[in-house]
Amino acid sequence: PSFVSFSTVCVLYTQGIANREWREFGRTEVIDNTLNPDFVRKFIVDYFFEERQNLRFDLYDLDCKSDNLSKHDFLGQAFCTLGEIVGSLGSRLEKPLIGIPGKKCGTIIIRAEELSNCRESVMLQFCGNKLDKKDFFGKSDPFLVFYRSNEDGSYTICHKTEVVKNTLDPVWQAFKIPVRALCNGDYDRSIKVEVYDWDRDGGHDFIGEFSTSYREMCRSQSQFHVYEVLFFTHTHTHVTLLSCLVDTELSFLDYIRGGTQINFTVAIDFTASNGNPSQPTSLHYMSPYQLNDYAMALRAIGEIIQDYDSDKLFPALGFGAKLPPDGRVSHEFPLNGNPQNPYCSGIDGVMEAYYQSLKSVRLYGPTHFSPVINHVARYASAVTDGSQYFILLIISDGVITDMAQTKESIVNAASLPMSIIIVGVGPAEFDEMIELDGDEERISSQGRYAERDIVQFVPFRDYIDRRGNHILSMARLAKEVLAEIPDQFLSYMRTRGIKPGPQPPPYTPCPPPAIHPLHTRRVSRI
Image (cartoon, rainbow, N blue to C red; front, top):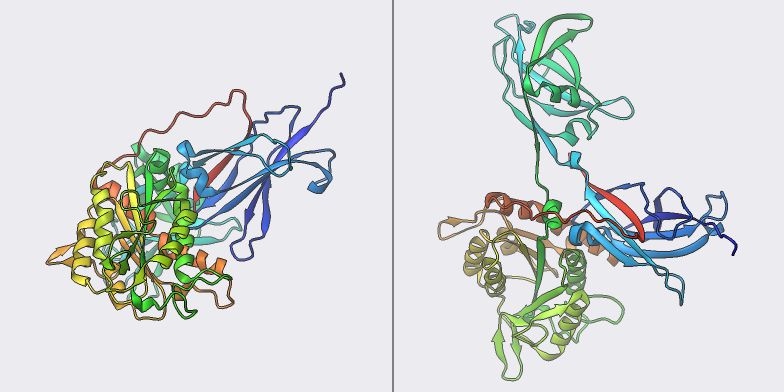
């Protein structure tokens, strides 16, 4: 039989948030004559927990040397989110290849790992020796300014020490700085340090400068390193690196890779102030043409969090309604009508239960938050070993009528593995909800302060796109309310001394389907 040769390449596409256009991000190397290509080239992708980062992987058999993919044979494709990959066991996701009707195209395995230099921080301490005297009366008031070099040869300030008053032999306090801030993760990149004498009028006198690199400083972990401070071409003073201690901090992804599950619960306001759901003016109105604000908030946040929950079963609750058949008022009822099993399958299941509830319950009141907070807290209090973390999304249109009880519930929940997201919909003033968000002042109840800040509140109206782009509105909302979750998650784990679970062993394909390793990194917010 004749031998048919083929050459396989995998092409990664990312999707824009606003226009949903797919853009080519990169291509792997070409692998010849195997049905099980194991691609080596890695892609470095910025990872954001708070964003839905859609990815597409297309595979082609290259027929010629053209870069135009339309000239080659399409072998299949797979769609996923970056959250799906990192949220899978061991950050390894296996997907069937689709795209050719009636044909099985095989599978693709995508692996992700966090770049280690994104997580390193370093503790540095310097002292000066016989620095130049710049003040006419008295000695100098020296401080150091650190700059990292950029690709274009320019410099960006990344740290400034405190001023040590009236001395030529200062010892500056040790300071901790992320390695990515100091050198962008490039250990050999130049770091410039300038020495100044502080002046009250802001016209600080330049004493001199020296250059180093992160790698050079790391070599000094066991001994002092003395730098000559240059003033133009003259040197007569020195700055000494006293200590350099490197620390790798545990990240949110370390816990996810170690098996920690994120449990998502939604609670929806069914009070009468939302308006009659059958009327277009109601916040619960189900238009055939677009989602209402409740549905948009639920889908925007839920579709991101569900990537980190392996069973995709979500409790969905309502509050403030009269329930059939007897019309009793409930502030903690299951949207699916099943108190023994309030779980819905996926976000689509939650949406369906929400729509069905609107047809069966009667909107009433008042607005009580504490019952649904206590509901989730009961589950969170039973699993405090770091294997699970709970997120409660409350969507409401207005004034909280059990404020004292809600504050007490939040203070109690702050010591548990849980976070609370509150989204305000509609035109009302949300003063109480703003008070619950502990950004300005830590929330307290009866003299007890919350152990940590676990509440994030936003009014949805602040994130609605004025041109009517609902996809963009939902992305903006999710980005705002979810951005604090990883830090809240880590604050619980750190204060309890909880380490991530053991990492799954590396996957070794035998024989391998199409493998595409995907690297992720955190974006520095500097």
